[in-house]
Image (tube, rainbow, N blue to C red; front, side, top):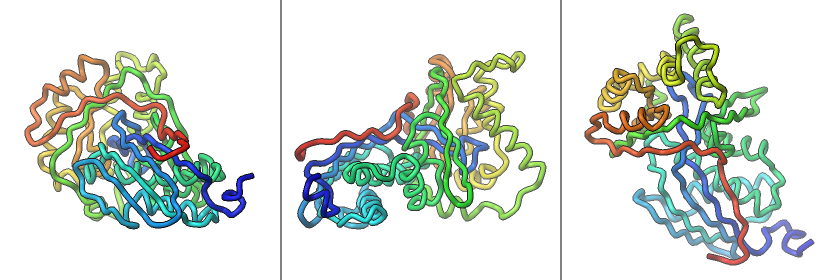
Length: 317
């Protein structure tokens, strides 16, 4: 065993990570369903003797201090493991837009937790990473998707986050519509009612169950006369959060309405303001791209099936 490891410190070298964006809720799956998207932040982390240096590449302004979310997640992970806090040298290439409902904070947290856990020899493992990342983020839907990739269903048992990963259908082609404005998650949660009707809860229960099945790789053979796109259109109906959030986002609300009027499954991504269209096949993806969306950047993507990817490196690159 290396001397640094005996002292409870990271060994020499570093890690390089690629972590995906994610879209949560997807209509009815409030705080439970998430999918990983083929849009990635890249992070490299190298322990040093002391100090902190952060090189950030990307359009969003983030603090190059201990308040940086990746750094906070790294520190929390080393504290959890019981290892001494090293100095750090980070390089972050940010491609996931911040404050747009695309899991940018979850990606940063997952990157930090996975980096520190890997440097320490992975004592946390997948379950520990999910638990700690959820504790930092506050809810498990985005972090589960960023950790594992694919479609994830998240829930709590006795206060401990759990997740089930489902291989998504390869024909699903997500199209993102990303506005220039941001949306505060706190504001979006603040408009939600404390109680909903039994009828609305029942609708969402059925739609969320259908959504998980319709997004999975299983063929929907038993749904008579309903191809996957029609199933997804029905499955993305929601009565728990979008009716309360969309009035805050009139441009997003109008875009969701117009996409759905064309038969394209669409919903807020997370709490918004971005909109995600779950197109089936290249033809419907092209139709989604063709819907007028003034004020939005249109980003056709694929689904990510791998989640966070970590590579150890011997020297700073």
